[in-house]
Length: 224
Image (tube, rainbow, N blue to C red):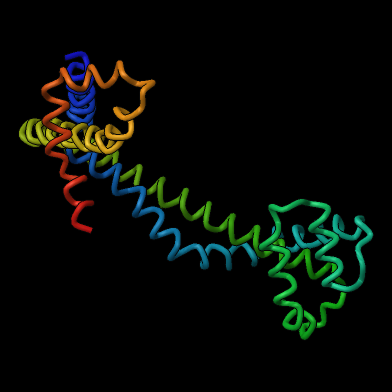
């Protein structure tokens, strides 16, 4: 019985949260994360081009090259990258391997100094990461403005009632979804001698048992 109360309160809590948000805003917030990521993946190269046309890229290259030069690395690129790896640790493995992979291309451009080369590669990596981050933030700001507009529209009397009712329904469904996710772990919990207290609560439950026996997620997984 106690477990049923917890489950019902959890589902109702999500229902009330989403009822307050409204169906339109709840769906919009969920979808906006994926929209922002997809658009950022598509547009970040253009942002990278813009950033590389500014003094930021040049200053970053010279700064990194200066830092690498102070490490007294070997003039050999391969040896230099290994020495740098030992200095900065394992987080830069993929980045340093990339410097070795691109050595011939960079040497063909007349870049013969290992510090300058590493500066260019690291700067390129940082610029790309910064470009993706800035693009994502800009898209999120645009979506936030759109959310404000939608919030205003959903305050209209007729739309407001339908929107809140839809939000309540969505919240209740999400609550049931998370309970079903939890139910997937119940077989492992009740077979543990240390959780007899939970087994007793589960055996005396009605709602939780019904959700456990009618778990749509478990049904789907069993068909795979």
